[in-house]
Image 1: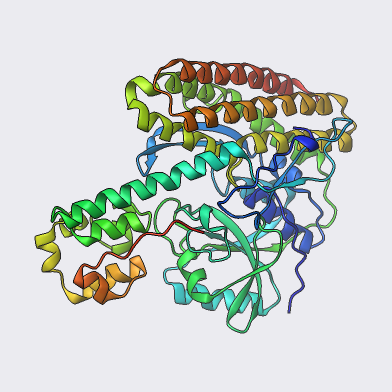
Image 2 (image 1 turned 90 degrees about the vertical axis):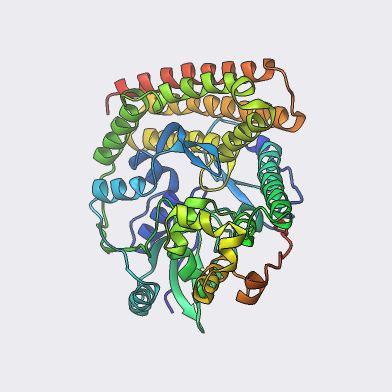
Length: 332
Length: 141
C-alpha cells in the first residue's frame, strides 16, 4: 500500500497540486501553488446558466492552476482521458498498483463521502486516489479532513459525469518532479499573469471590469428578474463565493497568504504589504456576502438593498484595482 | 480575516460533521496555520435557498405529472437535480427528443430499453419509472 500524506486544503485544485507534489519531495504550500498558477480571477457569466441561474467565478477556469504550476516548476505530468469507464478503471488500477497516487477530475454529485448538502452537479472537482482496500478505492480529497473511501461504481459515475466540464475519466500523475526548484521565476510569472487577467482581459465580464459589470446587474435584479429570481441570483453569487472549492473571499485570503509567503521568500517587503491590503479586500467580499445573505433571507421587494449591494461591489472593484495595479509594478 | 473572525456558524445542513479550511491572519497580521470553520451564515442561507428551489421545482413538476401534463421523466429529472441539456447528454439523445419523452402520450410508448436507460440515470428501478410511480424527494441530510 502506498503511503500518502493527506493534508486538508481550502481548495481542491491547488490542494491536489500541493499534496501530489509533496509526495515526490517537492514542497509547495497550497497558497504558493495558487499564486504560481495565477488562480485568482473574477468572472460573471450571465449567459452561462446552470438551472437558469447565471454563473459567477472567483478563480481561473478548472485545470489552469494545475497546468501552469507544472509548466512553471518543470514538473512533467501524464494526463489521460478515456472512452469508457472500464478502460478508465483498468488504467487506474494499473497505475495505483505501481504505487503512484493519481489525481482525477470528478463530479461532486456522485461522491458518497461528500457532505450531502453540497452534492450538486459540479464536474470540476479534484481528488487523489492512492490505493485500494478490497474493491473500494482510498481517496485523499483535499477538502475533506481525513482520507476517505469510495466504491468503484460511484467513482466511475463521478469520473464519467456528463455536462460541462466533462471529466471523461481524466486522470493525471507526475512522471518527473524536480527536487530543488528556484521559486523566483515561477512567482514572477504567476504574478504577472494574475495582473494581466485581473486588469487587462479585454472583455467586460472578466477581471476588475467583471466585478463592475456584476455590480450593474445586481442593481437591476429586482426590476428585471422579479423578487423571486432576484433572490435566487443573489444566493448563487454567495454560494459561488463561499462554497468549498470555489470560495471568493477565501481566494482573496489565499492569494494574500501567497503574497506574504512569496514576499518572505524573496525578501520583498512590497509584496508583503500588498498581501496585507488584499486581506482587507477579502474582508470587503465577506461583508458583501453577509449583506447579500440578509437580503436573500428577508426577501425584500424594493430596489434599495440591491442598489447598496451593487455599490459595495463597485467599492470592492476600486480597491482590487488599486491592489493589482500596485502588484503589476512590483520589481521581482 | 482575522483568525478569531473565522465564522463558526454551525447549521443543520451538515451537522458540524464537515469543516472547511480558511486562510486567516493572526494578531500580527500574518498568515500562519489555516483555520477550520464549521460554516457561515450567509453560505448556509444561500445553500438552504438553493435546496428550497430544488424542492419547489420538484413539487411543481409533481403536480404537472399528476395533472397529466408531463411524464414522470420530467419529475425524475428535477428530482436528480438535472436540467434538459444534462439529461439529454446522459441519455445520449437530443434535447428535443427528451422533451418529447416528457409528453405523457409519448412516454407510454417508450421502449423497455429506453425506460431502463432513464431509470439507470435516475438511480431508480425500471418498474417504478414504467409504472409512473413518483418516489418522494428527500433533502440531503
